[in-house]
Length: 332
Image (cartoon, rainbow, N blue to C red; front, side):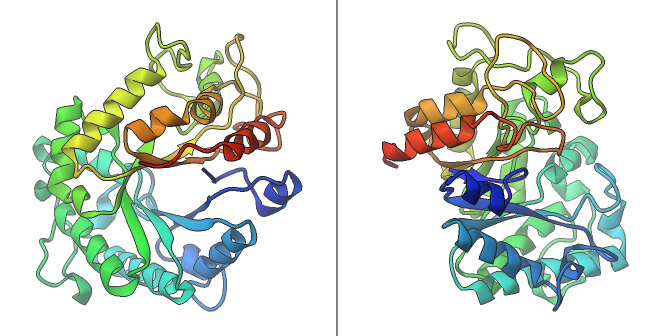
């Protein structure tokens, strides 16, 4: 069990929540990028690690540098200045994790792989060029997106042996699960340590408002899953998908990430910071279903500052997480 966006240390401590994982983003390349947030360069990694230690958790870093030029803008891949900075930051991240000298988790570029699959010729990551061997640590790899994933793994093993890394699939980038698993296998996702799985980066209720709020504009419905698993979409649908994906991509353990904090309700929608969702409720009351498909943890977190968080959920997360920890499900 872990916490991400919307779960600051002061709020975690005030509610006596005991997370196992504490997640924060590392964003940007160049001016105002994450290495500049603290001195010396890259010290933010240690800031996050110290915060994680203060609540008894393992730090998790979500590397989100590829979106520097805007979500889905992949022009930086062939820009020497951008990619030189990109690789320098990746190396710095792992070097700083090594200084921490304890286990840490790294989530490698969510959304990026989905955009590549959508934009590359025939969805082939070898057909999207990238400046890879521009960095000496990436020597001998291919100058394409496969090379990018390969160098991420190489740097992790070289600089931070206590780091555990995972690639997050983007199911919206593919037309089928088979297409998605083929793509992720081609980039080498099975060479990681775990799979980063996602339910939704927003509360279901935020998508149910008419008109949809600016940060919840998305097609598709229904958004609220059926906890009885009688109608679709439902939680058994999701776990079946996870099981299929996992079996095809290295059979690695699974960590859910950025699972929304919304509170269960029979009334669709909600309001800013008070939207409905039922993932927290279902996941924390059905943990054996998570471990049955290879899960070892869930990181709950708001994907935007307008979403429900642990200060606006009426103590749902505090209550359910404490109940779970009183009788946790053993890992297989």
